[in-house]
Amino acid sequence: MQIRSALISVFSKEGLEPIIRRLHELGVTLYSTGGTQTYIEQLGIPVIAVESLTGYPSILDGRVKTLHPAIFGGLLARREPGHLTQLKEYQIPEMDCVMVDLYPFEQTVASTNDPAQIIEKIDIGGVSLIRAGAKNWKDVVVVASQGEYGLFLDLLNSQNGQFSDDDRRELARRAFKVTSHYDTAIYNWFNQDADDPAFKHSITHSEVLRYGENPHQKGVYYGNLEDVFEKIQGKTISYNNLVDIDAAVQLMREFQQEKPTLAILKHTNACGVAARDTLVDAWKAALACDSTSAFGGIFITNTKVDLATAQEINKLFYEVLIAPDFAPEALELLTKKDQRILLKIKSFEVQSRSFRSLLNGVVEQDTDLRTETAADLKTVTNRAPEHVETEALLFAARCAKHLKSNAIALVKDQQLIGMGCGQPSRVDALRQAIAKAKSFGFDLQGAVMASDAFFPFPDCVEIAHEAGITAVIQPGGSIKDQDSIDACNERNMAMVTTGLRHFKH
Image (cartoon, rainbow, N blue to C red):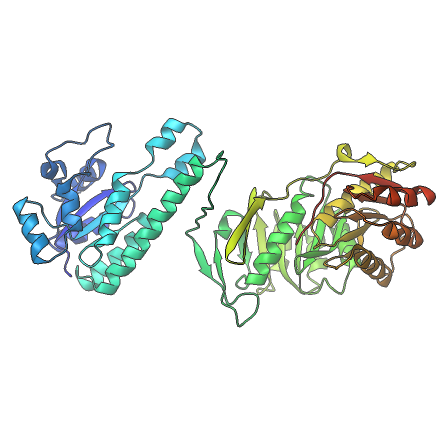
């Protein structure tokens, strides 16, 4: 199919000039509206105003320009005798191509809370033109956004204005991708406070991954990692890297305003977390938590990586290192191992809603953004925790929140010294945490324990006391809470409840 006529009505003019000039060289008749028409005229290229076809000027403050049979007839007519006869009868020209770039609705929502401004950026005519051209793709070439300008120009140049069935169908596919995303953004704006929301989510940027969780599984990432990170170097980020990176950011968000803190994660669970006055000391303490699991892990910190820390980290193999910044000399050292992924994080903020596919659908929930503070702690035992214990309990609660349930975190001196996670019972999780702490030589005397959910029986308190643990933090809420409280009182242990459960399935 040879393009002989084109309707052009776009918001973004960037990259438009070479397309206009090439269409003119190919003898294509150009039709246009408003600002786009003015732009083409300023290039010194002839263009026919849409209003000369419709008989109406742009009206209602520009809300109505192209919504007319003289325009949509030319786009929707099949190139067959019956339709062509009707076009001739009503003096409607065929439109072989339509180029549109919609009003920037999402950018407007991001820049203002003024409903009037936002409403005026809901494109009506543009979406209608795109859908008409895409529906009639066998006879019409549709360019639906600035993102397609480059492909369209390449095809124009390489094929001298001729477009195959495959070309037109691919552009139509992209067109419906544009309109569906646009409609989703508008729906979500209207849907912010709805009582009966429907699930609508659209991400247009995607990246094919090497594979999914395992080599026999295909994987695709939908999103724009550049919004969160500046990738300094390293191999291609894998599916498993992405899952671990997300877990690392969620965890370090809890400590972003604290003293230098470093965490080491493996398979989304923290195997080392520590806070110290200097980052290099935080690294050494985090590594000591579980130096075995740290090999090949994901490292994340809440502060700039200096040379001293980089020198220590560089001694160990890792997959990903994430930090808000890197000192130049640290970066010089770390980039010598070019396969290791270095990410400079722009913000520790995370999405307020989270999604997961399961069965034949999707579940959506509020992201667990609640973090316990001292004000959330309710002492339920005869002995209240001492100040140092309270600090450790809050640290432990943050760690336990990000371990797979059932989860137990043991903390001493702002260091995760033992962790149990993903266990079928809370007792199993505690025993795992104690065994891990002892295997790395930690003294549990004076340590504290955090649980992601309540204790249904007093057995965990009893086991913890035998190990030397002196204080416990848990959400409470069991009908047998008093049994665990009594067990603490009998052993002079302190227990606080928070009322916040942090299951992580």
